[in-house]
Amino acid sequence: MRVKSKIWLETEDQKIIFSDGRRDLLRAIEELGSIHRAAQQMGMSYRAAWGKIKASEERLGFHLVATSAGGPRGGGAVLTEEGRSFLDKYEKFKAEANTAVDALFRSHFPDGRP
Image (cartoon, rainbow, N blue to C red):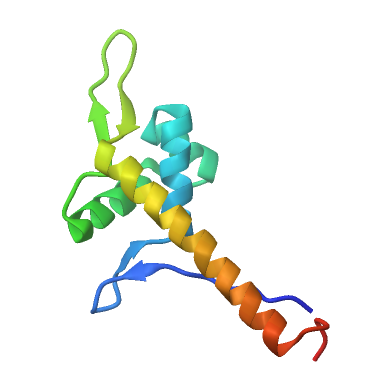
């Protein structure tokens, strides 16, 4: 037996601010340099990806991603400084939360059995 947990950040009225899916989207944008390619990699439309980014930005009050328009070499996207900082904080928070949940599980189920 093992423990699994899911953590996300939401507003008081239960609108998602940030989640693992949005973290994965930002990581893909950072890796691929494009919202379009990141969305494709994740199996979602560009519109859905852009909508998630914009909703998070609106709820956070700052930009996560900076885009540049296309041209001969095409456009692109990068994480803003605030976006990178927020992503780092979220990942550290999530790692610490998982460690705490694992410790709680071991304290209640030391042999991993019911």
